Length: 329
Length: 94
Image 1: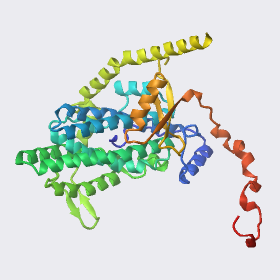
Image 2 (image 1 turned 90 degrees about the horizontal axis):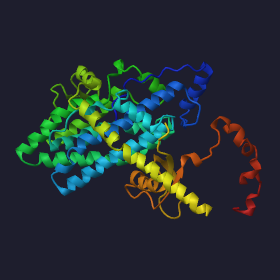
Image 3 (image 1 turned 135 degrees about the horizontal axis):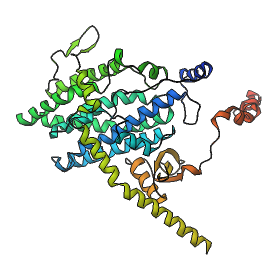
């Protein structure tokens, strides 16, 4: 899964014009930038922020789905959901490791998440009310994530691009297992089909918001595009997602909750109705149903794990000392 | 911070006959925990048959700011390449 369009990045940078021009030339030549290479401070800051947000989203994204592991309707679904949630944890770890190559520590990033300085994808501030929500998350949220992440495999920063290649390889299973859940529900009883439609109704708009504000309102996009951190604009990716997803909904016999959603022959894509950006910003700023609970859960995990981290370090020290003593004998 | 859990670099060999390749890094208190974390994080789908974990602090790297000078000795020795030598076509493939 993936963070929405970057929020609150600051791409300002104050290197000499010659340095910036030389860096830009490397980027334009599609050279990858590696951690120890000279890079503008704004490039470094933007990446730390974006990769950090992305990592946090993977970790927080484990919570809404983890909520259903014990209640999955069959052993097959339970095993698949467990594997998916474990993958999300793995994705978070690849990404934290990529961010750390830029000189930020895991502990710092975690503290920023817990005290609210760092964001994560707002989609996870919505609750998972029914089993159909798990299907819808796999189908739409992971589907939107794939749209976002495939171009990130070509990101100019090497460690981020390499992490994305691993993530994308694993992501396809997530989307397919979600769609299969929806398919099963939609071929079931009327009550099951209604449950699937209800989940689609609740997740459709938040999924479209995952791509971030419209291009005209996306303040830091131009710099990210110039640095080839980003390859497509928010609106371009959103359009791709809608064009791919609407026919999938039709196949399920479901309707996307947008009366203005219709095929536009001239542009070769679907038109869509206005997105409620007030809701988007309200949820980003902490006003979603689950914001408090998500951070509280992360904080509890961090605090409850403190003694384990501490004990592991002490144990490692003890073993090292014992080994040294034995070698000295 | 003093109590940061050490960083390890992870290398995986997919199968015998190939070399170990760097796949990423992770944090772990000691080498045993690093190995089992590497298995869980980097080989969930049979990506590997052998794992190396190395403390990141044990790696010495060349300086990217001096790449040109550092690798310069290799640049101008075209006589190290087979195409530098003229062999008549009549000799056949060599």
